[in-house]
Image (cartoon, rainbow over all chains, first blue to last red; front, side, top):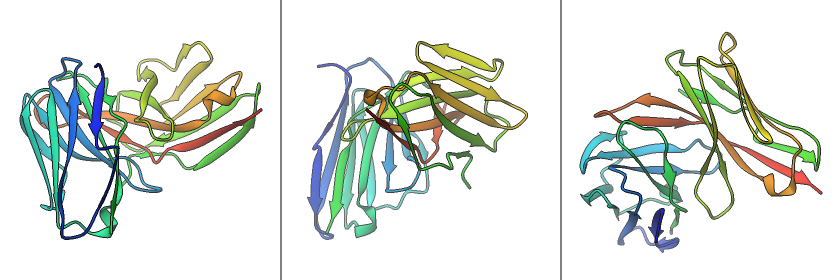
Length: 112
Length: 115
C-alpha cells in the first residue's frame, strides 16, 4: 500500500472515552503532521514530528496526545474530549526540509 | 491572526468557462505558495505552486498568478470541468521547528462547476 493511510475513517466517541487515531505512510518521508479541519476554518496545524521527534506543538490542549514510534507511524491519542473537538483530523507527511505534503484521507471525529 | 486568506467561501461557474479563485496573504516572508484541492471524504492533494520570484506558473488548464506588491495570488482554471468541483486551499510554507516547513492554509473556496 502506498501513500498516507488513516484509520479509522469515522469515529464517534463519548466525552469520557479514550480512543486513538492512526496514521501510516509508505512514502519514505521523515516528517509527519497532524492537522485539524473544523467547519468554516482553515486547516490548523496541531503537531509536527521530524525524525520521530516532536518539533512543534501548536498550543494544543493536553487532551490530545501525539505519539510517533517510528518515521512511518503517527498516532493521536484522545481522552476526555469536548463536543467542539468534533472535526476532520488530517495526517500528512513530507520529506524533512520540504513542503511537498502528502495528506491522508482524514478521520471524521464526532464527540457526543 | 490569519496569514493566508481566502475571502470567497464558494464559487459557481459553468462548464467550459474560467474559474478564478483568489487568495491574499499578510506575511511578506512567504516566498512560495501552493494550491491544494480537496474532494469530500479525501485529503487535500497538491495542485500547483509558484515561487515568489515568478509572477505566473502554468500547468495545463491551471495557472497561478502572483502579485507580490498586492500580496495576492489567484488560481485560474480554464476551461472548467465538472470534475474540478472541489474545495481549493491556498497555502504558504514557513520554516517551523527543526528544519521543517509548516504549511499555513486559507479557509478554502468551494468551487462548483455546473454542466
